[in-house]
Length: 311
Image 1 (cartoon, rainbow, N blue to C red):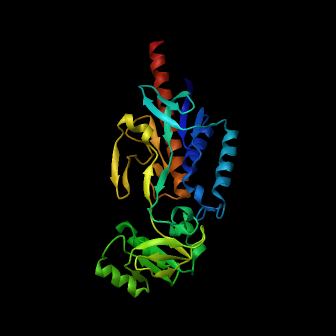
Image 2 (cartoon, helix red, strand yellow; image 1 turned 135 degrees about the vertical axis):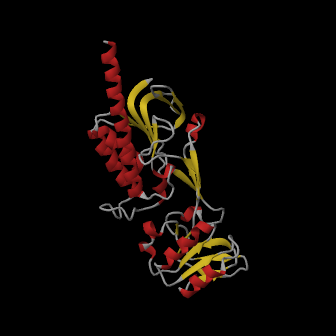
Image 3 (cartoon, rainbow, N blue to C red; image 1 turned 120 degrees about the vertical axis):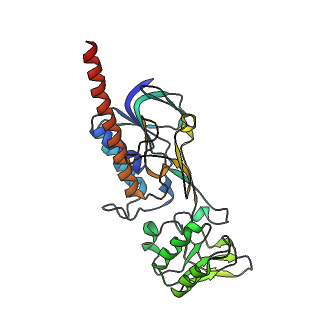
């Protein structure tokens, strides 16, 4: 097995930021990446200071180029299993290789499990959206819809109203709303449509409207909804790491520095926080990378003291 100071799983915004902190700290670091970042469906990133409007692949390419300066290695592969010992963590990859490291940073992100509605998948990230902060400006003053699938979206509907005076909320999949919620929405001019949506219309990835169960069509230019986040952390299943129940499902529990219940494993980005956007994921990755390096520093001194006492 090849030995490293740190292995970072995932080369998205969080993983590259963690690897940069480790590389700049002169840690021998390997990044393993499966090549499927969450935001690959979007043409541009927004709400990213200094990078507004940048295509997601461009940011990642710049990040990888920066890592080369610090000697960080990047390998295209997927992680199959992770085994933890007393002094290291061993990682098995789908290319048949095994690598060991003193620390591990998991930044593998999530899959957005989309609603089973005809027309959603081919428009995801283009005219079917989830984040008003990431995509809202680009559809301002247009005919906007909000497809409610969960009570978590009640706030999303109110955020979308700030973008346009023409907003329709489709509640058919969720059922009856609290009358107080309806009153608030109608007071702000939000239209409420109780008939279930059966189909999205228009030449994908564009959207021209939706067809309802009663065969009516409602014209729309874009629609907001939510997906179910599925964290990419199955390779950690054998370690029995502590998890926490969140409104979005069961996720790895981490402390303020991103450390899991294992003393050698950190996690950052959407794999622990599905609501984090690009800058939040970058920040979390940087914190986790710095924290992992700090733990290595402490261990280096502990090992040196132990060696000196044996001499």
